[in-house]
Image 1 (tube, one colour):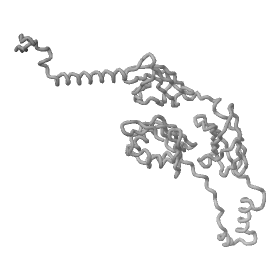
Image 2 (tube, one colour):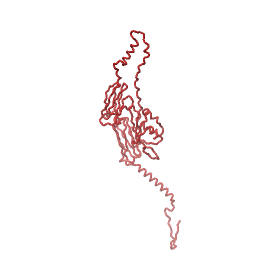
Image 3 (cartoon, rainbow, N blue to C red):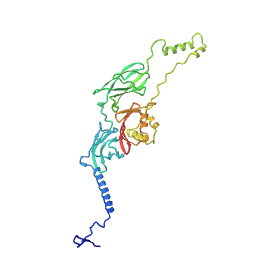
Image 4 (cartoon, helix red, strand yellow):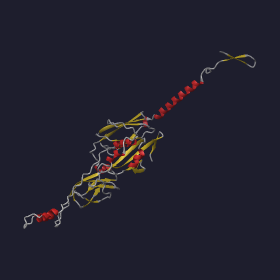
Length: 358
């Protein structure tokens, strides 16, 4: 259809219809929204991508031996997702800061997939754990044979400066002394395993076996042997063949029973303990599930994010029914394998964001 307009001189002017005159502006708005969404998705994808040329991670280990927990740290900027493959057919770890131990010696290839996009690989050689660094283990200096009731002085030799000493003498199952060169008096005979931990380095704990013999009897008349001879003479004197019934009134000699063997706590790895904490937070486990790993009636200390310390019972109340993300855990154990305390770095999810607990 043609539209006619009049000019000022009353002549007729023909108006040509525009290309967009028949297009609904709502259609243009829909197209604009679709294009905007597409650009947003493209932006998010590009943001998630990283430069694979600068992708990197570090491996921290003292000995590279079996049974040792090795630390793997991501160093790639803008990384949001991590997938660690340790090359030994174990489960993939999805933390930026991971710990892993190898059970067999060999050469392993570690692969880190970042943001499900970029892959970085490194190799590590693991040696057999029996090849211990002996020079880092202190040497306990003490006699190999002592007597019950004897004062025994303990010393040690070590190549570095020391500032803390934890001695266990194999009788109480606890730390018995915390001074540098202690003197100890054994109360029971038998084989004793002496432990020494310097500067809190539990991994390089020193051990030494010594033997404690029973207390020696003196030659005085009040010794056990003299006492038994006197009782025998009293029961059967030469002039009276009839036994005297008065010996029944003599109290029996008390017998000192040997000390009961200390119970060793069941073994639990750092990964297994971390899983228990997650289950505690999800309310699938309770405080009772931890008691067999702790000393009896001992509410062990917990160091939170390296800046706060609290009792384990308080820590349980703090994380129960919360969504948490654990960065790392370090356990401290005594000579009976009980957990005497631990440190943990973790975050709590609030309002869709992760917050460091303080």
